[in-house]
Amino acid sequence: MEHRLFPHITRACQGVIFTSLNLVKSLMEKTHTNKGLSVFVNVVDKIYEIGRNVTDDFKKNIKIVFDEYLPKWNYRAVPQLTN
Image (cartoon, rainbow, N blue to C red; front, side, top):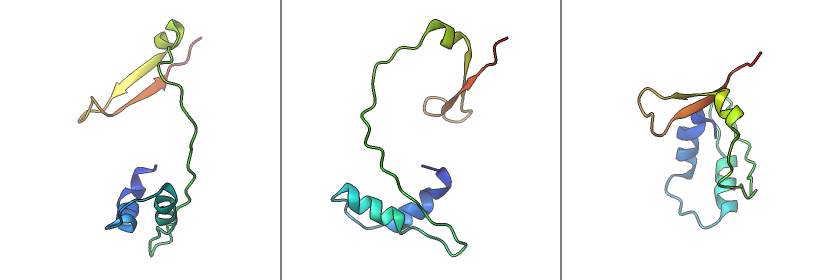
């Protein structure tokens, strides 16, 4: 989810007890602002594989950049170009 949407979606869902995924989806889809922001929701119900290992070559060519304020929780992987 795009971080800029958090306050708007939070406001749209405020005070509602979530009883189903469809309810949450419909509330999020009703999110809008006076400036023209509207939200489209796609639920990805794919089962993701866990415990997947990466190759040593991949580890050599990827740089992990940790966030300055919350390095334990926020980081990004930046692929490095190889020649």
